Length: 410
Image (cartoon, rainbow, N blue to C red; front, side, top):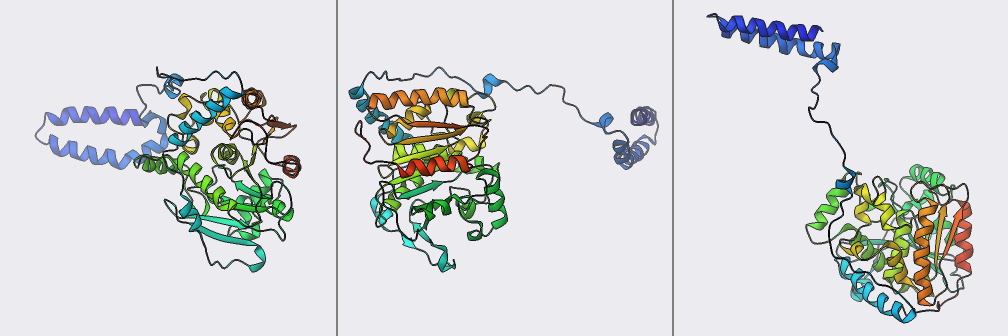
């Protein structure tokens, strides 16, 4: 009340002052007094002096998830022959939607090994690809390359709003310049396991890289994802397309390594999306394991879900592609390649019912291909994590793979 009384008194003094010869001087003095007292008045009762908006802010879900009257094309698949035609044409659409051409063979062949100060016993090598911007790849070599249909793995890291580390999320903490952060991350999501070391110990050649904005290629702040995506769009490129093409180039580099027989893409969370996307995109990838990231476009576009929250979605959305294809359609472009989806039954980001519905759509595509169906494993009492139980599912599945996969041409 003190503030209101003071303001009314100033108004009365101002009215009297304007009628006198010394009005200007008095008004000036009162203004100075007001500015002197204003901080104390605001501290005494900040709500009284706060500027309140006259128009309430209302979030309109229809505005945030706008549906435009756009023409769409959908295929009705009736058999294996129809699937081959669908797969061929949709792959062409997918390639076009990436907005970047694939890295040429000369760029992959021009990879150079970097001299690093890493311990000689670390088994890790750093290589650099001369792409649109230099891409550093890291080979994590086993003592002896295993026998088997698949003996190399490309590990695709998650997002998690943690940009300070990317590829390091998979590696032993001692190989990172931020060991405490890596250790905390692995405890939270991997039950304390360095999954790259787990695979290397079983004879797999492991390839890792930082996605744009992560680790040595950042770190971004969360809001800066939009700035990165906007600058790429100004050049006619999407962040999602850049990441996809880099993953494709990394797989091509891995396929050139001596002794490699077959390659599996393995990813968690955003990396799970990258894993089945890479299997659909790359002829060098023979199988994929996706952990915690598979669903339908309809669910993901609902308010507050993954594709409607902005920022992170720039890594996942290819402009125009989803007008004609749902995510299970894109994953089916990899058929007949073996595909394993691992999920937790308490994952709030990918609820089991929605995952199961999208999986049925994917499974139907594989049936039309004449291929062995993909597999979905849902672990009980598991959230958005890649814990030991799901790790064992991955290891057993990889060890039992048989190649080449039978089914429609790929």
